Length: 293
Image 1 (cartoon, rainbow, N blue to C red):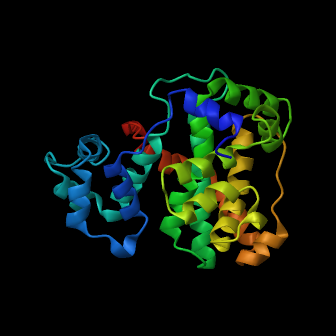
Image 2: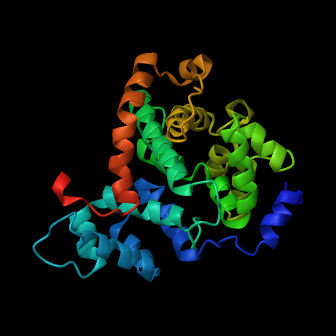
């Protein structure tokens, strides 16, 4: 994969973002809640002023309607709570991969696709909660970053992503379209390469690389299967956003393997649109419409 033409094109684009070490350390901390220590976390966050500023800015927004201004990261963590802080940190890290300039692609809408990533996160969280086979917070995180290969294409090779998107709109399956445009490779292959390039844990690389082919995974099999199913659920939601009426079926074999029922899947499908909009207001830092509150 390292020497594949598409990887060489990504490298030559000079747009591939680098993972700052301080952000990598924060990422590792939020992925390991059993090792989470507030003072150490604060120390790492302050190594990245933009993240620290964003957390404080968010807390001082009209969303919280506090009666005093928050001025430091410790107060922010106390008011937000660790879980909310982790959600915002994870979102911020994921957003490092999105283009600095809006509109690098002409037909592909990365903001709409971002909702698919959130949908995958929520579905992963709910399936993990139903089955208990993996940590639900961790699976939420994996859902946000599972399509890291798409955002790399959006940043580095937007014309390729536009071609893929145009083929999709003509009715071609996403993976088939990607193999045509990317010389036999897919966004999952690109994502797995990037995980290894950045030295991320093997579990993340496996989830990112095999979420469209769970039978290929040899490690972290339950997590990969869970995310595969969550991604399928959210893909149907995404296709509706695109105006397509095609529906992807859910693998009975995978459902049985991870212990989730058809009734539980139906519940996730029903709740997904509302939950996506709710989470998107947080992770996208969108302003709250006070008239709707």
